[in-house]
Length: 226
Image 1 (cartoon, rainbow, N blue to C red):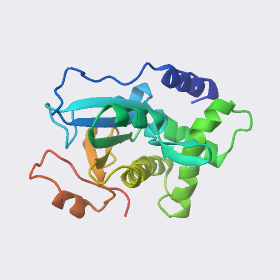
Image 2: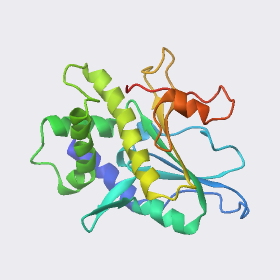
Image 3: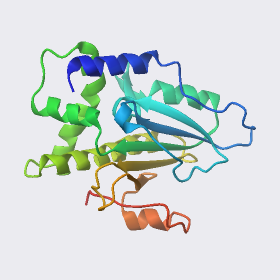
Image 4: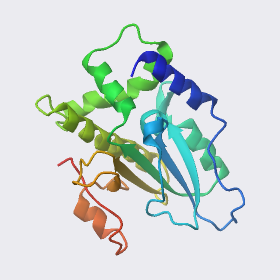
């Protein structure tokens, strides 16, 4: 993806009129925010646990499903998330990553070979993700010996983990924070186009996560990161 493409996406996100929600729901309806990437290849379909048909679901689209931003030298929750928290009593936040996320691919490429000519707006939005790539290598989650495709898959899950971890620390403990990866490529099994729960309220071990869930086999739990 070139800088012009990313800049266009960033502008569309910034100009977006806001998330869509059903304002007709009653006051006793539970509300969930679903944070996903703004790229067209990462569109979300269908509900994810703990959400069901009775919930009021509000979509939040960010570049690379980021849940945080920098403000006056501090890392704070994304401004759209904060705005919605002021409007709704939030019960859950679900972060959804994607194995074919072009934004993460671009962040990885810019970490490997920084582009000095990249537009300032693109750099500001991608710098947190580029730093996340570096953190992944420092922690051993990503290694240069891995095939590029596996690096991409592991980076998608690592990003979801880190975004959920931030929210879990920033939001009240009463808010459930779950992270999914939409496996568009068959990275988690031989059947692509499935969604996998990879972290729940900071927990990342699949056995620990499964123990916290209802007895529902339709909730797929998995993890690529040891």
